[in-house]
Amino acid sequence: MAGEVVEAIPLTKDANGVYRVGGSRVTFDVIVRAFNVGATPEEIAQDFPTLQLSDVYQVIGYYLKHSSELAEYFERRSRDEQELVQAHEEEWSPRGLRERLLARRKSQ
Figure 1: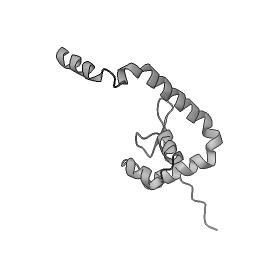
Figure 2: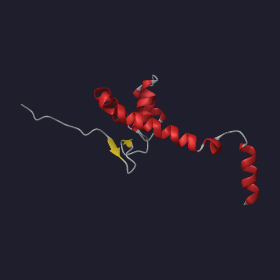
Figure 3: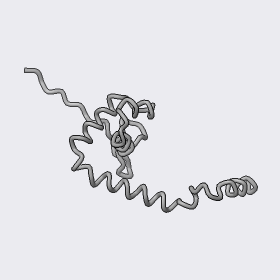
């Protein structure tokens, strides 16, 4: 009987507790979000050229197998994203963007 082949899931946790895929800067939640809105692994790999298709398949499989265990992680990431957007809402708003850019240009 041959020995069992076990491969590690291509996820690494950064200093902020965010999972990145396949040694890239692409986050696990971005991949899962794309998959959940109907993107295929091939489409996801095409959208993120730093990812390998096999890594995308592996992390989606991991997500599908462990989705209930990962729910808290994805909820935390969603809260963090909402807080970041709210904290920078005015700065990132397209309203007044032209004026802000012109003011920045004059100050340089």
